Length: 517
Ligand code: ADP
Ligand code: ZN
Image 1 (tube, rainbow, N blue to C red):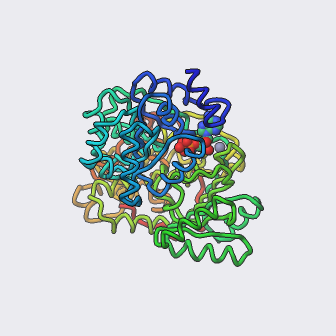
Image 2 (image 1 turned 120 degrees about the vertical axis):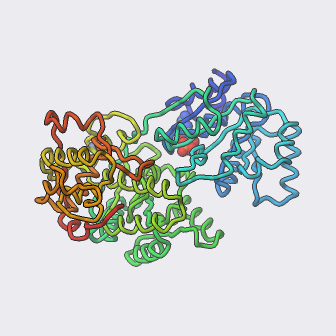
Image 3 (image 1 turned 45 degrees about the vertical axis):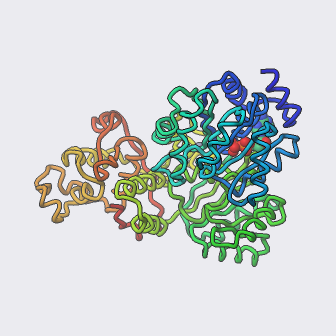
């Protein structure tokens, strides 16, 4: 282990390991597999770079981010590490030279795109080369339900089958339970030691506000950090360009970035941002994966992200240096409508669409929550935490109302509907609406029919989202989003616990009659 510390200090120039880095490295040096869940900026790269340097042979790093491979390789080379990459942007002669270096044992680290790795030619090459380890970066790309799904990742189980003696390390910053299980199953990591770092980023102040005049709201935040770098995320390319142009008119040096731009311009804007020539990057989510800029002071979402995972990953790009940073999300019901439309028009199979709607609802649950934002976020990732004192809800507690009674009615209505229906239908029953579906199932004769008519549909929607977000209800993706009671519902139904819910911002009420079914 002293060897690892020596490499850390002399090759990388850092005095000490962070968090679980030392344990992870020791595990790989002992020849074991590892599954590493660490938030963005946690320091995942060293976890495989150092063991690759210490073990005989070359470390093979599988990464989907071709655009960033070269940067990483350049950085490593400056440190004196013998690193190279192989991907489709390389001309055949250079690729051949890299392959020779691999065969001759002249490489410490080789970055490869998954589709390249899985070619017969490359697998045969690996067979003849001394191998230190396999690192599978962005391992959540193997998850079919995730938004970064890469079919080629499914083929990576071959690594274990062909080279059972070569240790593997899978790394990701996306860590809900289902994704973790999928990574283990699909990559054959049943024996791997798991290293799960807390997802808390205490230096980030979370703020989620209603969208009124989004550009002005963003500008106000930008102006509180006069010389600092920040990222603004928008949903559409047009909005990216318009917002950047508007900011420039206001005298803010803003750049823009989206997948529709020429790759040279994209590269150029990214470099300018990294070199601090333009300090605000307005971008779609095409920007940011793998970007290592430690001093980003704020991340603003002008549009709603797709899920809590995306929100967390995108806001995680702020404050990687540990200094105070801010994440501002602006949301309006128009965004929700738009996200629902995007899901509806997408090509995903129905079960996945339901899951995407649930993820969106979970995010809305966070937006509408009156609880500490950090507590709510961490709970979503399976972690307990105390109220943080560093989020909008902690700093300025929102107005709330006692929703215990309404929640009990909602839960009993779910129960009376035999836990077989989604929120839309249950709300119809609560409101006493005789829809064809209500009549078909005879729900107009339930004791809960019409017991919720003093609240509007939109208030019920918010309440159901809060019940879902708080774990009082679960929605079953396999059964058309049917709502089901949980362990937590019973004490609430019996009146042993209470529920307070954020009062709706006035502006949202009007637009809220949206069906999410
Ligand atoms: P991740 O891949 O988890 O997002 P990186 O591996 O890119 O994170 O590391 C994030 C930043 O932290 C990088 O600038 C890296 O050099 C730095 N870093 C990593 N480990 C250490 C350490 N032990 N001490 C100091 N800085 C570190
Ligand atoms: Zn808080």
